[in-house]
Image (cartoon, rainbow, N blue to C red; front, side, top):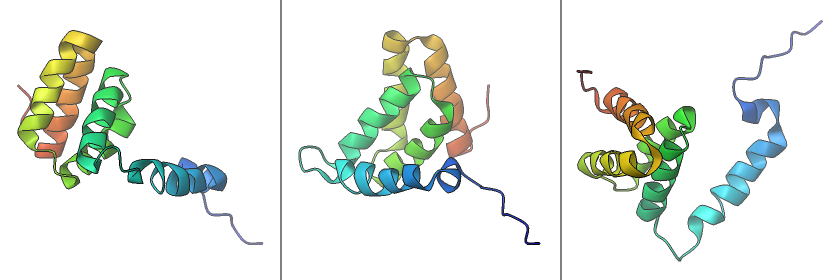
Length: 106
């Protein structure tokens, strides 16, 4: 009897969901010409931070840096959203930035 491998991600568990992520979201939506990837990253990070989507925010902050968003721009984004989505969402985003950039929490 062979042992089934435990899924490591939701995309392993639900392959169609992974296919849609790869082909539609990142293969089509992120490739549309109206916005560059840097701007898409800023928008995505702001929305995920404002919606308190911690897990997804981690990955998209890294993607934002890869797409040319600077550390200082992310810090500015976090400060800006505090007044639109609330202090707790900005603090949460700031903690993720601390993890990402290796800053000590005060």
